[in-house]
Image 1 (tube, rainbow, N blue to C red):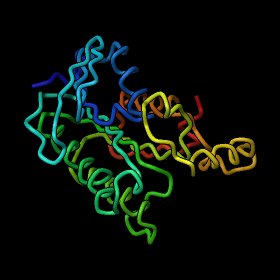
Image 2 (cartoon, rainbow, N blue to C red):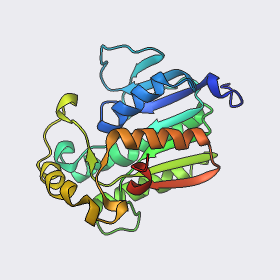
Image 3 (cartoon, rainbow, N blue to C red):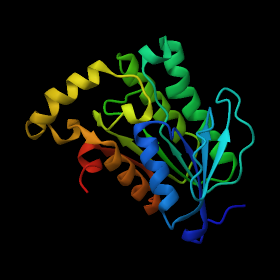
Length: 222
């Protein structure tokens, strides 16, 4: 069983390392003295091993039994355009999220960090917000001792460096909203992916019992 007493002997399970926030989480977790090992779930091997990182090439539709871990970090997400349909989007942003959380819990994890989105609400009429809200609700119900949910607004970062397709909507939103950030409510201001990752990891390490949600205001207040 993993040790939950010695901070510097912890291990973490990470899903979503190919995304904006996930990439930052992988770098921070692999550099952190809090963790001795980082288990990264990927669909295809990156071919770029990092210190303390062990890649697991998996089928998210049928996850195998995974190694024991203490913490779980989930930064999975797509768009309806990339996924191809609402059903395919929900499979990634809800089903895979819950499956990874459940696998981590089965491996002994007690702490969970999830990257969600501003406006997440299981009762929302907006499909995107509803799916994000359902994912939040369902991972909380799994019974982790400590759950931290990041709810960033527009994410800022270099998607091209990740080989991700351009998102015209985000491109325009960034150019329109960033100059006006000072006029927007703090919880709706664009936030850098690196800030989201750092704030989420710090909050997970704090291990406050129960559920804590971090808005863009809190995510960028570093």
